[in-house]
Amino acid sequence: MPAYAVIGAQWGDEGKGKIIDFLAERATVVARYSGGNNAGHTVMNEHGTFKFHLIPSGVCWPNTANVIGNGVVVDPNVLIEEIEDIEARGLDASTIVVSDRAHIVMPYHVQLDQLQEARRGDSAIGTTGRGIGPAYLDKVDRSGIRIGELLDTEDLTLRLPEIIERKNEILTKIYGADPIDIEVIFAQVREWAPKLSPHIRAAEDIVAQALENGENIILEGAQGALLDMDHGTYPYVTSSNPTVGGALTGLGLGPRAFGGVAGVYKAYCTRVGSGPFPTEIFGEDADVFRNAGPVGEFGATTGRPRRIGWFDGVAGRYSARVNGFDSMIITRLDILDGRESVKVCVAYELDGQRIEKFPIDAVLLERCKPIYEEVPGWTETTAGLSDPNLLPAGARNYVEFLEKLLNVPASLISTGPERHQTIVWRPIIPEA
Ligand code: IMP
Image (cartoon, rainbow, N blue to C red; front, side):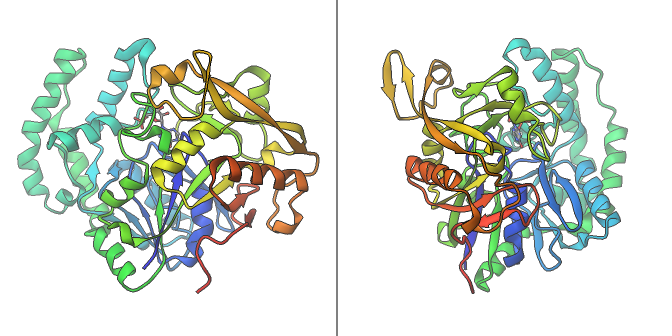
């Protein structure tokens, strides 16, 4: 009854979508457990190029159920648009199931996210502006609206006026913004309900049943461990738990469901938004990474240029610890092709002392200086490789260096954005 979690091990954008599309061939269910349409998972295969924000990345396989779990927050407009898009491109959207307990990102959440960020000025988090934080805030406040409520809009229309009244107080009195017109919200709800109703169900039951049947399930992480609300670089984090614990609560799973927990690490690091980033590089050095490969380093959701840095072994070890990774998936290895050497951060210097433990406090982390080791590079190209025997010695050496640094064995190595550009170093899902 194994569930295999695929979790971002850095600050998100590690290339999880591609990996999940690759692994989903052998799974009957792919399930998202946290975040919302702040995520942007790029999938490239024989059906084309897709950027999924909410739809799980297993949707290109015909026999895979795609579950959006209770831990996800769902903007119905985005989900409807994605469903219509994949249908127009010939994929089967009936495989998409949304938990009735997933919370809705309402239009006022989006508005509040953007107003709050503007108010924060220089200390802005750099959110994606998709209303994610305010939606989770309402969930915790017990004033959120769950997707299941779209199945009975009469009840919802009774509940909405009080909620809107509170939101309007905040909008007008705190932010000096225009109040929301409740009729506009009612109209949205009436539009969402018939379009989403066929997909709304107790999605956790589908996951539980698949596990009971002994089928393979992929748990699709969004964002990354270092953006985790509890374990990330707070306050520069997202408002959910991308780490492995989020997969349990976000889908109603027990710990014995797991067959494996794989951490997805880019061969270097990126970050979007504000917050400490010890190995960050700037200028032309960063631009080389940003513009390399068929898909550059620009946010899949917002298009913002990503911040770039060398691989951070201190943060990487921390991430492996808080998630209990039993394997690491290395992505974008090909971007390092043609370098004489590659820098890897093996420790930090803090106040003149060498430290190897990740200081999770954002203020302390900001003061950490990376201590690098130069690992020999390789002149050959790895782009598109799928045969492990063809990996050049320098690239193999780099993979082994990271394995040792993190004390986690590599499982998959990604050498390009397309599904088949993947090296199976060690299989994640054992042969049946
Ligand atoms: P929010 O999730 O939109 O509230 O943004 C909070 C922080 O998480 C910001 O720094 C965002 O840039 C970052 N973030 C959110 N989603 C992603 C993602 O999918 N990839 C990378 N960064 C993300």
